[in-house]
Image (tube, rainbow, N blue to C red; front, side, top):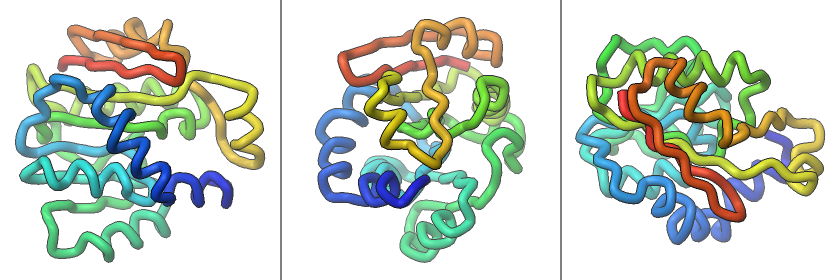
Length: 186
């Protein structure tokens, strides 16, 4: 993430947006279970909000500095932070009862790697588990905000086919004026 983006994703305003709009819209009535995977928590604002409602949360973060800071901050809590690549996860098949990813998929540099991430999430979920994902809709404003950073927005019109191709049986995609949310059942 570039410095401006990291500052936004660590801000109280972003925490409020996540708490009040993004997470409730994305999660809706999904039942995540008691051993949940969070893909790409970044600085961990989503982790902070999720962990109070979940018995166990594992966060996989690619950036070693962000993963280290989050692991230190949440040491002794119900969160395990793993510094690893979500396109090649170090978890057993069928490990998790649910998975989530909020506003990070646009940081995965190619559609092929996004699809590999989707397949890895499907692999590590138990049968009938849900993957809840959300992100922003593509815009020129967001492209400019990501200057010097990876910006590869996901077209929500392609999600059903892509998630089904990754191993999910049922996919529901919703959009609003700002973004999209998907529920994919393994």
